[in-house]
Length: 603
Image (cartoon, rainbow, N blue to C red; front, side, top):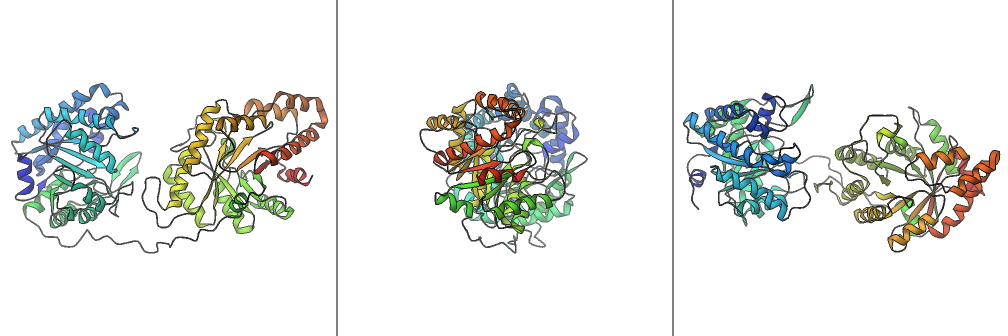
């Protein structure tokens, strides 16, 4: 279907598009829940911004509807305003066109759905709902922008096509390596676009003009008209506000010249770009400016490491060979010195009774030395292997990946992925954990790094070789949930598991029965000598997931001053039984006496 947009797209000079509408509205209109709310609360500001871009030379303006799908608006309690926001947004863009008297195209902006499960019919329906309103109110084309994932972009195209025949411009967000955050390359997008009904393909948002140009180089062979609408640069924080790089308009003029030379038929901007940058783009297009230097050249990073040799850890080998494994659990110091802990590690190693040491990660939500750093120090000083616990509580996915890669470079290989105690149970009342991923997500992250990419599928310089374990709690209140989570952890890549502390193996028997048979991965059970009735009461009543059966509590109470001996005898019995039902044990030492477990092992 031939349209005014198609005619402009394929003939004459490139179309100049507008800039970063949403960011500018958030900075100029107070207390907006999202930029799209300005269509209802600050209509004059939206219209004025459109007018400013048109006066700067924009021939294509986008409606203020990037996040105006029902799913995203629900996060701001605006889901009942889908029709009104999208309708008003087109109305305001049309008013700006009438005010200026310019022959301007109106693109109905549609962005990704945000956090939704799956990309099936429901996703298509969300895209279709928004597209139907945008076309019905008078948009000239649909702009699908800032996508990272090809499956979601395909769902968006299908959703739009189910209700509209308007031209579609499809834009993805690329980094400097011409890859999206999900590891999707611009070259792969170029192959995909030849088989779908879109009028133009390109890059928007992202790391800046040079990233967009790098993507255009790979998209060009597709033969589909190209579009480039990058951010002004990367964003930062200043006094709690998001700020962008201070790119000079001249830089955007040079970007426009480069984009035009690569065949771009739509050239504009995204976040951080103002009327000044759009005016520079318009001047460069109008003057048919030739590039003064190439901005598109992408240099590969020097020093990318070769994949490391994957060497099986001692811990992994013992478990693979079916050997009985003993780990001593250590608490990192609550201070700035490792001397005392390393002395303990030396004594455990010299005893010959311990195979590995596992290192807690801020257990009880009390800040101590980082387990990965402690483990690195242990490896530098001793031969015994550490097994650091890593939680999703204290860092984002990016932060976790960063720490894990650094630890891997230091020789850390064994890892136990756990969710982590919430901060409010420890020393940080009122605090909040990060929890971007739980133990299942953290296991997936570790498996991804082993496969040579991050959690989004983006390639890393060299794969890791972590031996990944998880926690499991046979005494959980809801065994069905625990069994399901254990299965998900195994599916995510877990190779072994450590149980919650057990004081009665009937709980383990019940768990395995619910699981449907023996554990598919080796189990190490948690054993701790109880040295007092008071400790048993605290464990049972105050530690989530720990059950100390009533007969044991009564036995400790009746033992009186001999409670420690009673508790040690019980731990010895559990060790004997553990050999029949598990492949190892991790031992928690008596309070502030980490070498106390040697008494248990020596007997």
